[in-house]
Image 1 (cartoon, rainbow, N blue to C red):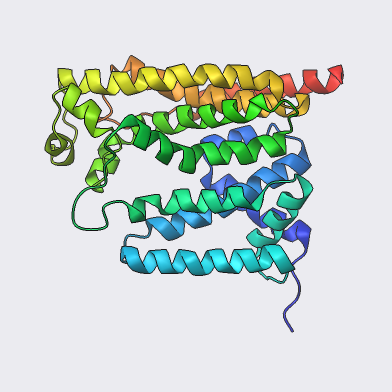
Image 2 (image 1 turned 90 degrees about the vertical axis):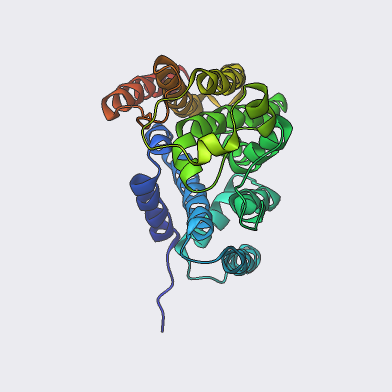
Length: 303
C-alpha cells in the first residue's frame, strides 16, 4: 500500500523546488514568515511544473498542449477531492484554501504558460503585434502570479490588485529585455512589432543576428523604450508595498529590489543584452536579502 504524503512533506518538496529553481524569487521567499513562505513555495512549484511541461521542446507543441491539459485535469480533480499523491498538488490545495486563492487564478497561470504554444503554431516566429497584445501576455505569465502572491502576502485595500498586476508587468518586461537574444534563438520575439517598425528594426535582424553582436543604435533605442515602460510600472510596486500586510512587506521589498536592480544593470549596459546576459550578482542579492531581513525584524518589533 502506498503511504500517504503528509502536508509537511509536501511543503518540504515545494521548498526544495523553489530553492533549486527560483533564483531571484527565492531570496524574497526567505524573508516571509513560515506559513506564507510555504504557500509561496507551493505556488512556485506549481508554476515551475507548468513551465517545464510547456518548454520541453523535445516534444511537439500539440503533444505538449495535451500533456498540460491532462496535468491540469489531474490538478482540478485533486483540488476538488484531495485525492492525490502529487506533493505539489497537496501543498497547493492547502495554500489555496488557507489563503483564499481563487482557483480561477491558477487556471490563468496555466493559460499563461501555454500561451507561447498557442501563438503562431506553424513555422513562423512567435511575435506580438502591439504593446497591448504584449501586455496581455505579460498579464497571464506574470501579473497573475502577482495576484496570487498578494493573497498570500495579505491585503485589504482592493487598489492592491491593480498595482500587483502592474508590478507583474514591470517584472516581465525586465525579463523580456534580459532574454531578447535567448528568446530570438528559440524563434520568439516579444518586442512588439509596432515598436520594431517605429525604430527601423527588422524581425530578421533579431532572429538571425550573429551571436554576441552588440546592438545597433536603432536597437538600443528600441530596447530603451521597453526599459522606460518597465520603469514606469515599477512605480506601482512602490505604491503596492504599504498596502500589503506588514510582515510580508520585507519579502515584497526584496523581490522588487532585485528585479529593479536587474533593469538598472541593463540600463547601465546601454541596453546591450546581446553580448552578455544581464544578471544581478549573488553578492548583491545577498545584500538586498540582508536588508530585507532587517526590515522583517523591524516590522515584527513594531507589531
